[in-house]
Image (tube, rainbow, N blue to C red):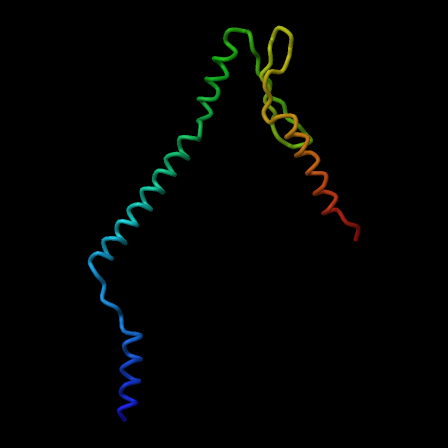
Length: 122
Protein backbone atom coordinates (compact mmCIF):
# COMPACT_ATOMS: atom_id res chain seq x y z
CA UNK A 1 0.00 0.00 0.00
CA UNK A 2 2.78 2.43 0.82
CA UNK A 3 4.41 1.56 -2.47
CA UNK A 4 1.16 2.24 -4.37
CA UNK A 5 0.75 5.67 -2.79
CA UNK A 6 4.37 6.56 -3.59
CA UNK A 7 3.91 5.56 -7.24
CA UNK A 8 0.60 7.42 -7.45
CA UNK A 9 2.10 10.61 -6.01
CA UNK A 10 5.06 10.37 -8.41
CA UNK A 11 2.74 10.07 -11.41
CA UNK A 12 0.72 13.05 -10.24
CA UNK A 13 3.87 15.19 -9.84
CA UNK A 14 5.05 14.38 -13.35
CA UNK A 15 1.83 15.54 -14.98
CA UNK A 16 1.08 18.40 -12.62
CA UNK A 17 1.45 21.84 -14.23
CA UNK A 18 4.58 23.65 -13.19
CA UNK A 19 4.21 27.08 -11.60
CA UNK A 20 4.53 29.90 -14.12
CA UNK A 21 6.92 32.61 -13.05
CA UNK A 22 6.43 36.29 -13.82
CA UNK A 23 9.89 36.44 -15.40
CA UNK A 24 8.98 33.67 -17.81
CA UNK A 25 5.79 35.49 -18.80
CA UNK A 26 7.77 38.67 -19.38
CA UNK A 27 10.29 36.80 -21.52
CA UNK A 28 7.54 35.29 -23.64
CA UNK A 29 5.85 38.67 -24.08
CA UNK A 30 9.18 40.26 -25.01
CA UNK A 31 9.93 37.51 -27.53
CA UNK A 32 6.51 37.99 -29.12
CA UNK A 33 7.10 41.75 -29.37
CA UNK A 34 10.47 41.15 -31.04
CA UNK A 35 8.96 38.70 -33.51
CA UNK A 36 6.10 41.08 -34.31
CA UNK A 37 8.54 43.96 -34.77
CA UNK A 38 10.71 41.81 -37.06
CA UNK A 39 7.68 40.81 -39.15
CA UNK A 40 6.57 44.44 -39.41
CA UNK A 41 10.07 45.50 -40.48
CA UNK A 42 10.21 42.74 -43.08
CA UNK A 43 6.80 43.73 -44.45
CA UNK A 44 7.96 47.36 -44.62
CA UNK A 45 11.09 46.37 -46.57
CA UNK A 46 9.00 44.30 -48.97
CA UNK A 47 6.69 47.25 -49.59
CA UNK A 48 9.67 49.54 -50.15
CA UNK A 49 11.10 47.13 -52.72
CA UNK A 50 7.91 47.20 -54.76
CA UNK A 51 8.00 50.03 -57.24
CA UNK A 52 4.77 51.40 -58.58
CA UNK A 53 4.34 51.19 -62.37
CA UNK A 54 3.90 54.97 -62.46
CA UNK A 55 7.35 55.43 -60.94
CA UNK A 56 8.88 53.12 -63.54
CA UNK A 57 7.20 55.02 -66.36
CA UNK A 58 8.41 58.32 -64.92
CA UNK A 59 11.97 57.00 -64.83
CA UNK A 60 11.70 55.76 -68.42
CA UNK A 61 10.34 59.13 -69.56
CA UNK A 62 13.17 60.94 -67.77
CA UNK A 63 15.70 58.65 -69.45
CA UNK A 64 14.29 59.19 -72.94
CA UNK A 65 13.39 62.92 -72.74
CA UNK A 66 16.78 64.19 -73.85
CA UNK A 67 16.64 62.02 -76.97
CA UNK A 68 19.92 60.21 -76.34
CA UNK A 69 18.38 56.93 -75.26
CA UNK A 70 15.38 54.93 -76.34
CA UNK A 71 13.46 52.07 -74.75
CA UNK A 72 12.04 49.05 -76.57
CA UNK A 73 9.53 46.60 -75.19
CA UNK A 74 9.43 43.32 -77.10
CA UNK A 75 7.66 40.06 -76.47
CA UNK A 76 10.02 37.08 -76.70
CA UNK A 77 8.08 34.01 -77.79
CA UNK A 78 10.83 31.59 -76.67
CA UNK A 79 10.39 32.55 -73.02
CA UNK A 80 6.83 33.96 -73.27
CA UNK A 81 7.86 37.15 -71.53
CA UNK A 82 8.59 40.81 -72.21
CA UNK A 83 12.15 41.93 -72.92
CA UNK A 84 13.06 45.56 -72.22
CA UNK A 85 16.00 47.12 -74.01
CA UNK A 86 17.57 50.52 -73.36
CA UNK A 87 19.47 51.59 -76.47
CA UNK A 88 21.52 54.49 -77.78
CA UNK A 89 19.44 56.29 -80.41
CA UNK A 90 22.49 57.48 -82.32
CA UNK A 91 23.95 54.07 -83.20
CA UNK A 92 21.08 51.73 -82.11
CA UNK A 93 23.48 49.93 -79.72
CA UNK A 94 21.73 48.13 -76.84
CA UNK A 95 23.05 49.49 -73.54
CA UNK A 96 21.01 47.35 -71.19
CA UNK A 97 18.58 44.48 -71.62
CA UNK A 98 16.22 43.03 -69.02
CA UNK A 99 16.28 40.05 -68.72
CA UNK A 100 19.84 39.56 -69.93
CA UNK A 101 20.51 37.54 -73.08
CA UNK A 102 22.14 34.74 -71.06
CA UNK A 103 19.04 34.41 -68.92
CA UNK A 104 16.81 34.29 -72.01
CA UNK A 105 18.94 31.47 -73.46
CA UNK A 106 18.83 29.60 -70.16
CA UNK A 107 15.07 29.93 -69.82
CA UNK A 108 14.56 28.87 -73.43
CA UNK A 109 16.74 25.77 -73.08
CA UNK A 110 15.11 24.98 -69.75
CA UNK A 111 11.67 25.03 -71.38
CA UNK A 112 12.96 22.64 -74.05
CA UNK A 113 14.31 20.27 -71.40
CA UNK A 114 10.99 20.31 -69.54
CA UNK A 115 9.19 19.65 -72.81
CA UNK A 116 11.46 16.67 -73.49
CA UNK A 117 10.83 15.25 -70.03
CA UNK A 118 7.07 15.68 -70.12
CA UNK A 119 6.30 14.78 -73.75
CA UNK A 120 6.09 11.01 -73.89
CA UNK A 121 4.41 8.66 -76.28
CA UNK A 122 1.35 6.81 -75.10
